Length: 269
Image 1: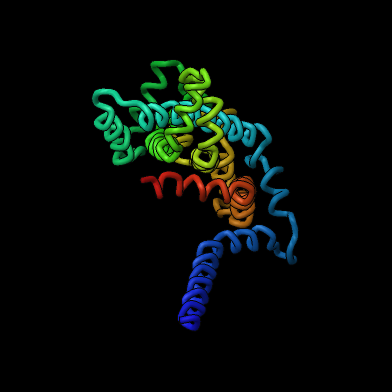
Image 2: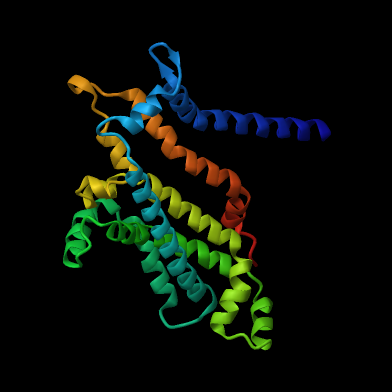
């Protein structure tokens, strides 16, 4: 029995290591290619990324930070309220409304970007970071509300009832008792919203027109052409690594809460 248990454990380790290498190999190759130059290895590709005429500028990075911050904030706010309502309150049509919210996931967002572009034009938000953030938030909400509903449902009802007995109203119970209890879910939702908004390319490509509002992804793609129409792959790889670093750092610091957020409600009942 001990031998089969050891073999099973080693099998899990080997499988996990193989999958990790498989998924990390493209990023490791990008890191290697971003440092490789004609004369050896160095940071020349990164210097060219930030100093070339059509390269990445500080305001491009700032635009990405602003879009990511607005998307994360709006997603957390709406998903928290929506998840709390779906998870704790009983009202007519609750299940139908929740299913309709999830049904948005079945709509390919690329098919409605043109309609959203026209809508943002009517609202005076075309070619704006706020408009882009609203669109990205809308695409994040179905999954985020689903996650937060599961997180709230995993919290024991007695905890909420004790807060009501102590005199907390609905808002007070949510802020003082429920939010600390669903912290892993909040981190998971926020991390997903950041990863999507930071690395999104297609939506900014359609919704942003001027270079002043370009995000980092658009700036990196915009500098892909070098002399005589050739593609500067080395600078592109440097851009890929630069954009991946914040995501890797955030995930490294939050991976424990991220995993807990995904398992919230899995053992409920």
